[in-house]
Each structure stands twice: as C-alpha cells, then as structure tokens.
Length: 256
Image 1 (cartoon, helix red, strand yellow):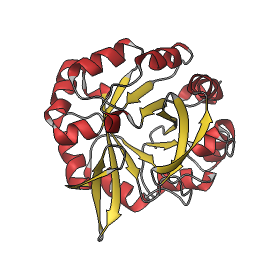
Image 2 (tube, rainbow, N blue to C red; image 1 turned 120 degrees about the vertical axis):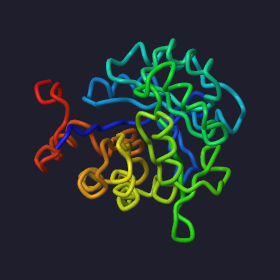
Image 3 (cartoon, rainbow, N blue to C red; image 1 turned 30 degrees about the vertical axis):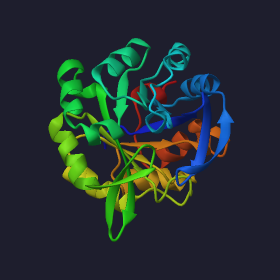
Image 4 (cartoon, rainbow, N blue to C red; image 1 turned 180 degrees about the vertical axis):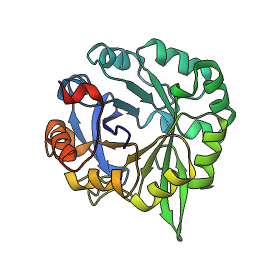
C-alpha cells in the first residue's frame, strides 16, 4: 500500500480559523499561525489553508497570513480561496505555498487548470470540488457551497485530471462537520476512475473514519479540521492507531 497522508485544514474567515457544519454555522477554532505550527510539529503530512469567503466576497486570499503560516511550518503547504488568475498563483507561491487549490474559478474557466499545470507543473495544481448528494447523484457547488451548478462530480473530476490537475480534493457537503464518516462510496468511485491522488474531506469524527476512508474509500489522503482544532483527536495518536490497522505513512514519521 502506498503511503497515505493526514492533512489538517485551516478554514480561514476574517483572518481566523473557523469550523462549521454543512458549510454554515461557523465557530472560532483558533489562531491559524499557531495551529499551523502545532500541526507541523505534531507530525501532519501536509497543511491546507482555505480562505473560505474570498471567492464569495470577490477578493484575494490574505497573502500576509499565508507568509506568516509558511514561515512557521516545514511540511507541504496548499493554499486556496479567491484564486482566479495566474497572477494569484504566482503571488501565493511567492508567499510560501507549495501547491495551489482552485475551485470556483476553474469551474467557470477550466482553462486555468491547463495554464497552471503548463506553467508550474501538475504537482502544484490541486482542484478542490465541493459537492452535494442530490437526487441520487453528486453535484458541484461554487463560492464555498453557496451556489449550485449542474456540474456532475465525477465528470468534472475526470475533466480536471485530463486538463492537468495533480490532485483532487473532494469535500462532501453532505458529510462536512457532521462527524459521521467520509463519503466513502463516492471517494472509491473517484479513486477507481482517476489516475491522480484523491484527498477525502468532510465527515471525520473518530479514528475509525480515517481508517475507513483509506480502506473503503481508497483515498490517498484524509483532510480534517474540527477533530484536530478542538483536541478531539491528536495526529500522533491517530497515526499510531492507523499503523496498527495496516495503514502506511511517510518514512520520516516512523523515525521521528
């Protein structure tokens, strides 16, 4: 089994880390710089920063905050939110991001995926997809889950891969913040249909949920927020549990 990844996510609203349920009802979860540094020390494999209101508010991601977080971590760092053009990508990579997560902008303008992959490499381009299960199928949403589209999750993920995306970050709006487990059936289908890594997001509530998304959902990485932010699960305890369940992680963690 290839090495899996545990990825804490910093959802940023008004410069603060927040967490909601089903993309609404947000509460403060702490200082993003302090949280990022703590996760880096604790053994997280990567860190994701999502400015969850940037697209909705029509503004750019907070570059200064990205710089501060990047200066305090030593793990791969993905940044998303309000990225609409190549200049945004250059600005955030210059601020310390290793990868860029694009969502609403590339549904509106899919060519941006081609441009990012061509100029910076596929490894830089993470296509995030917020989708909700409706009428027996999965449909994509824009602007942090506020605007529905007729885009099908699986068709869009395949197009994103074909255009040069290096990873798919799939958040189930149905499962987000509910803590009843990830959308493993949809994740497994994505894993079967794609040839790039799939990151599971939305639904983590206990350690077994991480195991299930790696085994049943075939996810390459599991992203979570509130269970880490509020101290419900520690990354070290989680990795210890998952190793016992036969889940493999990166080399450095075993000997750290």
